[in-house]
Length: 158
Image (cartoon, rainbow, N blue to C red; front, side, top):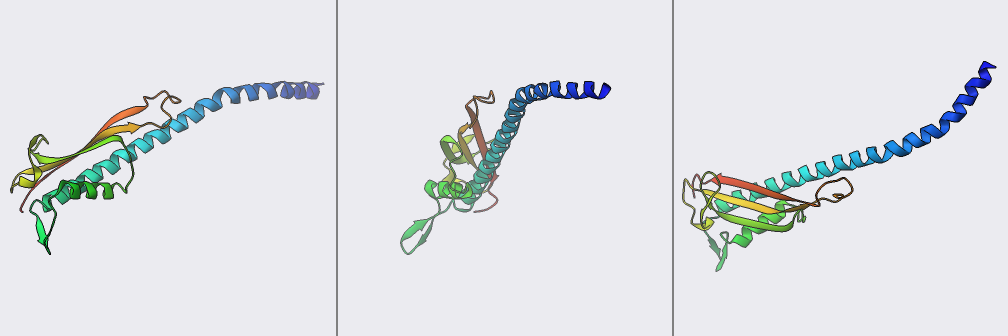
């Protein structure tokens, strides 16, 4: 008789397992999507910071124009933004992305045009925009997050 009693209990627990799974599985999936979204956000910040650093390095080394065969290269803002876009792999990471390039003090405050940077001064590249959260409403996050990536480099020589 005891054996029959145990089999009866196993049959009654099948429904409870299905209900528990139905309650817990959506929470686990939302948690995993949150982890993936956070990883994507950190990757975006890293890519933007590297792109700003590359742009600042290029701007510092190209403050003076170079003329080859009557074509001037180097100190145009479009050249720096092309380097930044290349460093980002051509990806569109932010909505409303804005790139600013300027001469800066040590804190990154704008003090003038980057093409007039002298030895001992700094160049700043600032990338701003809004990060779009893919599953914002589903995982109870905002749909956009403001992002600022900035690199300030000091000119040692021209």
